[in-house]
Length: 375
Image 1 (tube, one colour):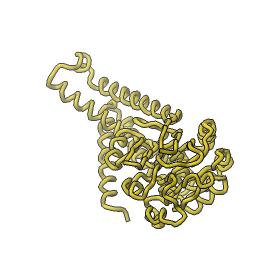
Image 2 (tube, one colour):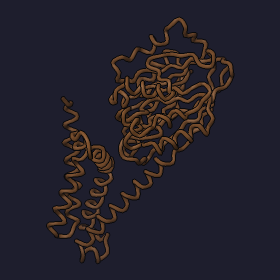
Image 3 (tube, helix red, strand yellow):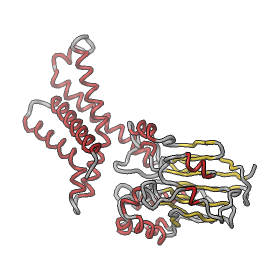
Image 4 (cartoon, helix red, strand yellow):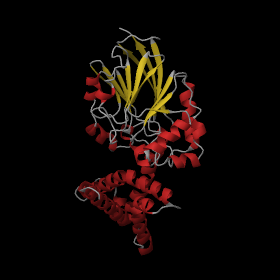
């Protein structure tokens, strides 16, 4: 059973789709076939995401992708419709349009619809460019605990979402970019797999993951999408191709120079309290402790537990405006660096993404981290 919030959201979504459809239909020429086609098209787009999950094979993946494209673009269509409505309202009271518009209202409405399609397509083309060209964010950090060696080079890459939207060719590019930075250790803080490990096997992505190279190893934690896809099968797939998955575990790195802890996802029923995870007699709190936790929730907990540096993902930095604003309201730190006393955290916007391949108001990113130890 879905929550009441789901049904409220779905009802609002359908109303929004109806408003977009009605606004667009008014801008079309008075041709019943053209307007009927518009209504059918809007209905298809509005229900394609649901249809993609109802169908079990065949066109299900394509329908989901079309549905996601429509869902993430609805705010833009709605804003455009409201914009033209507002201009029309003002235009009836003041002369803000040239005389041609008043003499050719139907043609002017149609041109407004064409302009909306062109501008929105341009925005999402720019968003695709931001997705396809990841930025490298450089961080230079200090941890006031001694360790040998006295410095560490980490590359952090989260939220690949391998499967439907992000395929083998894109993964090949990600691996090349990460390896080119020549890190000491590679950390992957969750959502590496989008829907199923089987889809990665079908696309032969395992050998690409196996090409990740770092002297101290490649480590990951599972995110919420691995939970949806089957945590055990995802962990087994990653381990098969050389990625060490930490599931509420703490391991010593570089001969005990520092600890690396990895938590089960926030929604996992098997997630242990962090204090208990770090309470083992073998964990020397005088050594640096680095943590991977997919979702950046309750940052007071790792601070209180004595974690020195945490890496998270999950938020995608909002991925597409206006969600970029919404995630800032939900999370204390939705993207970027934050320090709380001796605790430091970086939340990456991730390399891949969910759904439509575009980023508007955010960037795909690799985090290139240089850590200096010692007081």
